[in-house]
Length: 110
Image (cartoon, rainbow, N blue to C red; front, side, top):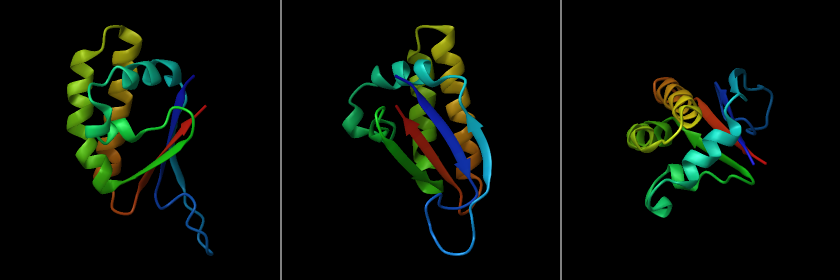
């Protein structure tokens, strides 16, 4: 099981004439990210807990901004270097999305 993350400049399935631009695709940390998120305490109380490891989940810039602090807490709880690397990558993408109006993160589960 793994989770890949795509950062788009607009809603990835918006429809219409404009096609969102893929700004970044994170595929290197899928299994480690899934493991780190699975260990996240009280997942229902957090935005990161909404990420479906088996399906797709989308965050807009407001969701990304709110989830950044959760990812910081999650980073401190990681037990392996692979998980820490995955969560650092997640934090970078959350920060970039939060700072880019109209952008979206698309989490692609297995």
